[in-house]
Amino acid sequence: MNASSSWLRCLIVACTALLCACGNYEEKRIREAMVEKGFGSRAEGDSRYENYVGGGDFITFLIPSAAVGDPDTERLVALQTTQMVRVDGTILIPYLGPLYVLGMTEAQLGALVKNQLRPLFKKEIDVQAIILSGGKFFYALGESGRKGPIRLEPDLTIWRAMFLVGWSSLANLGRVQIIRPDAENPLVMEVNVREMYLSGFTNRNFSIRENDLIYVPPTFLGLVARLLERILDPVSVAVTTMLGIARIQNAYDIVTGETNRVYFRF
Image (cartoon, rainbow, N blue to C red; front, side):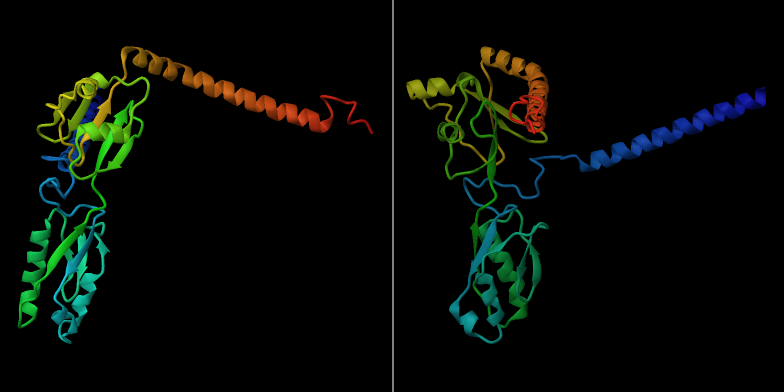
């Protein structure tokens, strides 16, 4: 009996240690994947002041015509072709290969390519980068007319952004929230858009940055309406399904002559 109890205790201890080890391993992997600062994307910056390379952007370069006509550097003409930033954050540079560019401004990218090409040739080649932005968005949720990612326009403020996304009849325009996500210090700014439109007082006409979220909450009656909508949604699905089955049965009865035998007598 004592030996059996000892083996049982040892088995319990071993299983507990194994479970703890598995739990600690999974928690360690989760901690490694967590965002320590910022939004979590590899490319970060403030495009309102200086544009930077983000995922989905397109890049092209300006190079001197002399470099294009020189047999030693004629392959640089490929830089004038617009290319999209690849999924790994790189673009292809002749004579160099893939070059990581995420988060760089136009000035930084041009200087980097120029410095990378300098050791390959006897003369310095002036290279200027141009970022054709195509991947910077803000987001809208709640009682907004448009939801999800929306392309960021230059110098966009909440005044124009609200007209850009629209709102439903249940929207509470007095408590619109601009949520600026961050892993350390997220910022939530509440704006009375209704008062802004009626009075013209633009003290809280905040600028919209990339990755901002505009949340348009419902009014109290709108909240009740959405709650009832969620409660009744499964019922409406069931009723729609039953009506669909009834229509199929009715069509079958008509075709087989069960509904009106006058027209289907042989």
